Image (cartoon, rainbow over all chains, first blue to last red; front, side):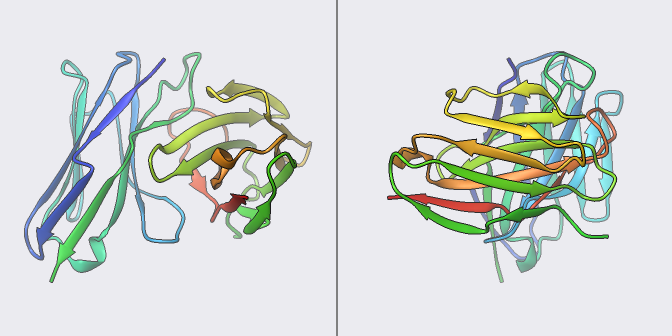
Length: 114
Length: 114
């Protein structure tokens, strides 16, 4: 089955700097890669997603890149702000295949210092 | 539109007891999935239901079971509770399984086994 590895597990940056979180997946048939943000005590919320037919997607300060050959995708946050502090989870799924549910990485705790 | 609703939000059980958690998906959503979240293991997939049928099941023992009703509401049950079952149990819903259908999480049910 699918396995998703996420690095780093913790990340501390200064306000205004960029943050990059990387994930690798094992199932080459995976075709959908969402990123969720979970603030302390709250539910995970989708912040951006990318499909396997796209290499990059941007939404304001957030971008995600996908390298299908390397089975690797990354979340990029620019001009970080204290409210970006949270745990970020990547996930992968093979929609349309036998295992269509999301498999999550173990999360990255991002701390943005003012 | 109401979000995904989970009940109860907090509960304490004793080892050996059983517990039932409930999830009401967003109106119109027919797919419900369950995840276990613990500090060390992140978000682990339990099972997914669509149209009252279990589509996928994660790697959990048979003590973990679930079902979905005709109104798409879902329940999960854990029998013979163990200390290691202490976790946040998250329910998520989407319109249907498949690419393009965003998964929305509930606030979760915090289970403590003593």
